[in-house]
Length: 365
Image (cartoon, rainbow, N blue to C red; front, side):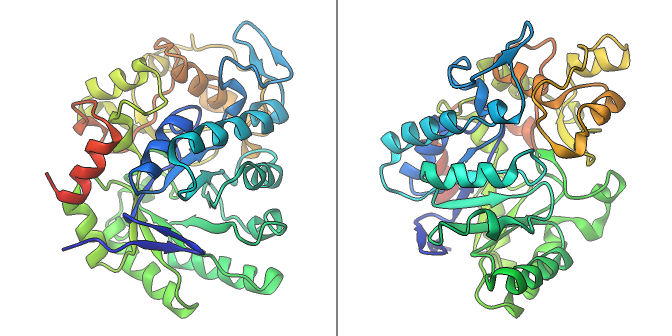
């Protein structure tokens, strides 16, 4: 089976593989640039850009950890622009995407920032992005790709976008409950047979057909060429993969984060409560031991990163600030870092180049 290219809006992705956006420094300029260079779609995460290059673009920081103050600094416009500029130095004019969480504070502003910075494609999950077309209305060439977990969500989205902006998604990602980070299901729903990616993908493909030629991209637990072929045979036009790209030299994550995931066993990867309101998957680490022992770092909500957290109220309920703890992971602080990974993270056993990984995924070696 040979892979066909993936068309998203006016952009053609040579190899139908999208590198998932991984926040707070896992997929920034080095990783995204390398993936696009190799013919996939590299995706820059907009989350936590204020700590890029030791916070030189954050106009105000607070506390011992120099936390970017408020969303305008945690989601730094200047830093995002520099990340795109640096990625473009690697991949040139090949398509380049940006992942922006719908739950993040200042969503519409960050979408505009990404468009100005040179994003060709915007991908949004962590909520149903009803305002996505409004946020990008001044940039009609930018392709819009929402992430959904059910056909019902896609139907609601298409109806709203059509009514308010006479626009439909340029593609849609359907994400199953084996993905890393935040899930689109409640805790108990993540284990139900009917919510497996193999179950929901054909349903979303059928819903997408009702609205025209909307490519469907499968995500969540995809690991190798065999998985890609399986998803394409189920009707997907491409796949999105995050965790597999952590095991690359170009991944922007700290060596500590990579080591924690490489050393993780299957039983170490769990679903945790999150301030965002939905469960998140990662490695059970020293942070979680501290949370259980009630010795985790104090929660101050300096960055105001996500609206569902309600200025730290939900963080206090679950025992940690997600912005601070993901930032610690990026900076290699194992004691208090939060290490997100997909369910298959335990299968990572080596660090290779993006070029080698793409060859493995395409050629099946």
